[in-house]
Length: 281
Image 1 (tube, rainbow, N blue to C red):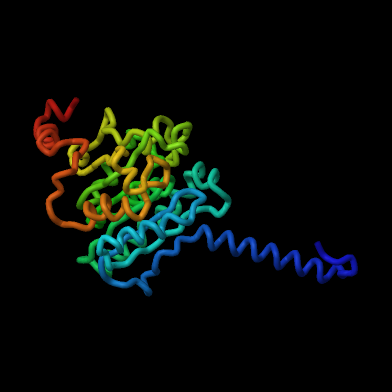
Image 2 (cartoon, rainbow, N blue to C red):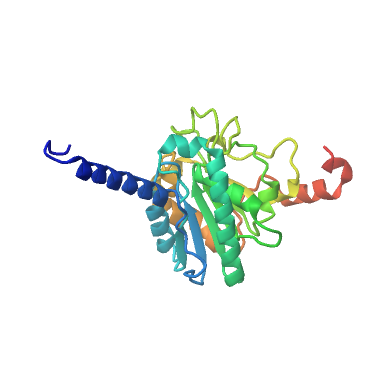
């Protein structure tokens, strides 16, 4: 790589520069880049987390939101290791560390702009960071809505604690045609079992709070979605047209949502929580 006439000092210097550059690049890739508290801009905000090893879905999500009329902030929270898809997916401790930072970012934004809408969106393993972060939030701090694109968390993950920090709805896309998740044995949250991104989220058999699932909505793939650019693939739901036509109207509107089909219909959730015998089941 270096000329044979290069002396040992210059060669050593070059190696050190290369190592320093690689270390700096790795640190940059693994650092969350959402706005710091000193540079935060007020207004409606969407914080997006990409999937493991990916760095590209943010653009189509942003474009879809803009096409739907969203003029607020779109922040990207970078959480990956910079080491590739497999470490990003399997290193649960790393994701939990990043979740602490995301939770702090949410807390700071809420403290500075308490009345601004704040939504979280994530893809694949990034959804695990979102769920972990919600669980880390202090009492009284919440976001408005959450969207989990192709979540690679276990389907019956208990969202009771996370949903206490979501004032609106949590949406999860899923597709049985997802070629990435179909062979998955260990999920991004560390749990085993069918990932939510294949057949949707499910109410756990021993759920802590059944009523929270009255605000959890699966968005399974359907053939008409192919016309919106989502063929059922792993990242297809983050496409511009699907985000514009399906995601944005649910997340950005404060009006009624007649098309929502929550996992726990409101009347059942109320009955379960208000009837001791039913709640004990």
